Amino acid sequence: MHIAGVAFAYPERTVSNAEMLQIVANQSREGFQGDLNTALQTIEFYLNYIGSVNRHWLAEGEQAFTYTERAINQALDQAGLDKGDIDLLIHASVDKRVIEPAMAFFVAKAMGMDKTQCFDVTEACGSWTRATQIAQAFLASGQFKNILIVTAEYACHEGQPLAQNHKLTSMADLEWAFASYTVGEGSTATILTA
Image (cartoon, helix red, strand yellow):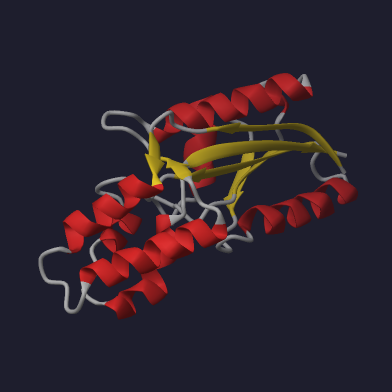
């Protein structure tokens, strides 16, 4: 298997650790049981400990597909391929706006890949890795020649599913909410060939 093209596109809006802490503080102030300052200090400590500095999120009015399309086009250019050369598109993301049909169909349709076969792989942080394993098997079998794997994660900014984690009710919430404070938004496109 050969990686013929790989690209990443992300929004320009940058959310710093300080801004993340302010978002959590603003949303948690009302209804938090306990010492909110201790919770914020804990979040700050762990963000610094893991090395998180900034994350990119969509700004108001931006569309996620803009970045998905950009990543796909950059990967196609690197690979020297056209959209019509892609035999299979695998959407490998946790952020799925639809379950059925697969998100891959919507991406293919928006990109004008009308003859491309499609399906999704959803395996949390392992989605891209699992998709490459599946792609490798398809390429080895000769069933497909050019496979596009797309990731598109845009669930963190205001009004999105992970944004609900910005409102804490107690210190115990950090066990499940903290990881979402480290996550950014963006799209990748990887083109694999035999």
